[in-house]
Length: 205
Image (cartoon, rainbow, N blue to C red; front, top):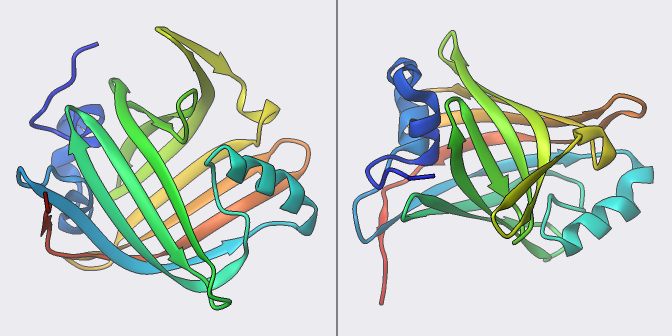
């Protein structure tokens, strides 16, 4: 599958819907200048049931999600687009001094679809659309990547159904709300917060 080097995965997936996004969300996802990395600063509230602790700690071993609760946790985000693949790095600083990094790679999959990989073989395919100026994601399946194969795995077998809602606050800031709900166990994970898009930073050699 070919990838555009002039657009980010979300721009490609949204197509004409991209133009209906408010300024802050366009800044959040727009392609940064060559030789620069995209930066954002904000805070996250992370919550989940106590009985999910062990499972989330296991998921962290595979690079997925966060296995520590927190309120207004300072979070720094870097995004770098390389050959159509978007590298995300989220750095969270907890009050106990623990620093946690959550890395992922986002790629364009199809019209209105992206895949976010948290390691070399496991990703989450999500549908995206814009409605009333808000950006919505809805999980479709987990993806097991084996060479050129992309094998779908039902969401409920691993965590549950994922949704994200992003809404502009002003021209440079936005709020996001990410939730995972299992059909049997209810809401098993949430993180939500507000972020400000900063000036892109030149990469150092």
